[in-house]
Image (cartoon, rainbow, N blue to C red):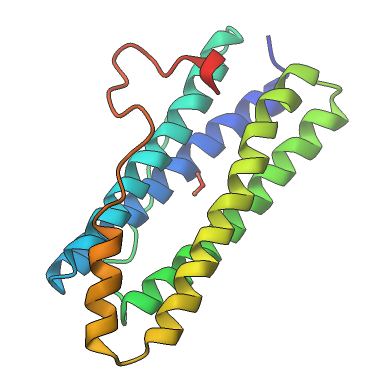
Length: 178
Ligand code: FEO
């Protein structure tokens, strides 16, 4: 059982993770239109990661005997100025998500909800990686500038990213693997 304030905040976080998935799916579509298939792949893998984050929260709420309440997901932007712009927006968005996770953690601490605090620790660590990765992409794209050859090399590298999270949620995502 969870305090109502915590259940509500966890349900809000599910919505934020699904919005994140939508945002990266939109970026995948944008880069696909630029024929940057590797970038498109990278963002679609990121889509799966975000849906996995949402699913972890979904399972946790249910495992505590509470109800999952899904809400309308805001539409993400449909176009971007450049791949660099997409990654700058990725970093800015991840910083917002980090703040949201930190706020959730503060709430769990305030309510002395140790189970939720331990559950959220995975997300705190994940956000460090998310921001670091986006920052690296921005740095690389700034180095590349207008060099088309270097851009195609990076695209080829990003084509190799594979989803290392479950993508079939029909059997759940197994909290103990978190
Ligand atoms: Fe689920 Fe990218 O934060």
